[in-house]
Length: 324
Ligand code: CP
Image (cartoon, rainbow, N blue to C red; front, side):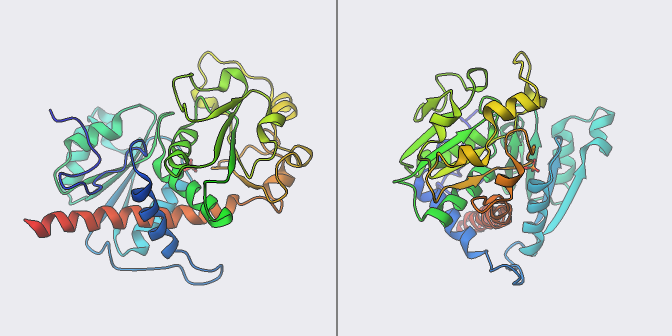
């Protein structure tokens, strides 16, 4: 079997299961396209017909608010058909394999599978088995990958800071179990961010051979000092196995971002969080809702980024067929 590639034989993006290996130019094209879908608050959202006749199936086996809703909105706003499959009510519960579910939906003309799964490797496995015209997008794979979140985080930084090279970005919290941290760090590294800091208690740091183009801090005050961007992460309690963590109150006291701590960062700092937030655990409410917070803009950007990814994959598919 050929080694898996997200790109087709002409180098066009066909699947998006990870940002690992995507170049700066490719990421910037997606961000530029996403920016074009954004409108001022209160304006009617951008729409087009570029997904007319295209069916996108959302298959989530883990909970989601932002990612699932934004893929559905993105599909509809591009004129496509969105199918939300409730896996808990699907024939998977009667013993049907993942591939049989995929082939069943493919037989109903599903063109794009958007998959969130707790098990590593499911997105790639499906991508390796779908028909040639079908694409797979990861909506979150175990602790490994959340590529559209990485893109929307990069877009948010770009909007507020105008670039990446001179920035200090601190990613704070449970990095070890976070797919968001991995994808966001991959995007920012590809875009040549000035300094990327991993800030976490030792048990929540990733292994030393991961995310190597970063500096590591096990003290939050040192880690966020003079930062331009602080990205807070929740503790992924659903993925903790052997790691024990302090109570919510203790964690907030030691690792929570509060207004006093935020003063250590640059005065123009922006605070980000992928959501869902645990208020008064990793972030104080008055920081989450405060003037430095861009958390709601991240959500807005999520729809635009997912529109950009869907439109790109379908455009690339049309490019492949038009050559044959
Ligand atoms: N950030 C993120 O993936 O949020 P959801 O789990 O709500 O999709």
